[in-house]
Image 1 (spheres, one colour):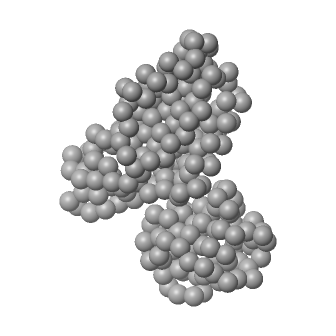
Image 2 (cartoon, chains in turn cyan, orange):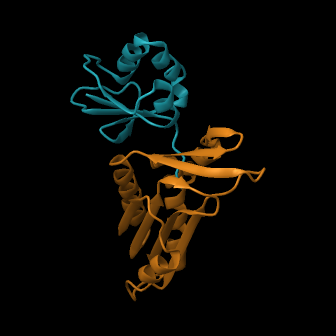
Length: 81
Length: 147
């Protein structure tokens, strides 16, 4: 699946987008997998209350299942307007 | 209904005039414009606005559709810019047209409240003293609960 990062999450991880091969069942499982990779991921995902997640471009939750999902995006709370 | 997510400037007067001229059934037109505000110390160089192409358009369309279902609206316009902006630059505008003003005002406020916290934009303030991501405010999230 494609995993996208925005704003300071993108800066902390150091890239805007990557392809991830994963068997993760939920967003939380994916976060755990990514965090185990390298410190920069662990740092970005240290406080999930400061993050939001979108699945296929719809806001979702960290306990949501990933089955059938093609695009996951992590970002801080939005500041539009 | 028109949703535009763009880097380019927009002409507030021309947009408002075209929008207001669209349908004589609408006796009320409300417009709101958001402008890049300087920092308190007056040294903001650039506001950089990042967004999530694809999701941004979807999220705004959903918010506008919801507004149309809640109020009696003739038309809705949302223009939101991204990229590098300077203090005083217009970031975005919302316009609502309705037969009566209450619907137009309330729907415009609803659109603004939701665009603030549910449209995937992120602002970064760049000044001589550094670059900081603008943090979302609790009061902005709380504002959604009144709807």
